Amino acid sequence: MHKIKANTEVASAVVSNSDANGNCDIKLTFKQPHNKQYYVGMAQKLGVAYISVNGSKKTPTQILEEIRNKNK
Image (cartoon, rainbow, N blue to C red; front, side, top):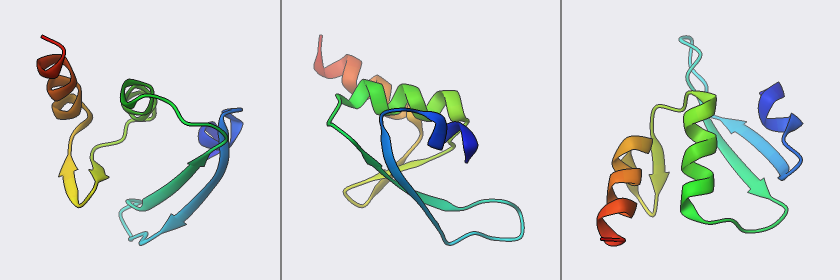
């Protein structure tokens, strides 16, 4: 959590649904909007396993593949 709060682009980070295994959901609010690749790259650096966007749960790698396929 310290890595997230140390990022100057993050306005707030709220943890919810944590379990005994150390897994949790985090809602991040950024100071300004960024593109999808920025968020996915940040998630990969932090070791995030899944990202939920508009009700769809995907790995960061799956999201990056979708971005690359759209840009072809």
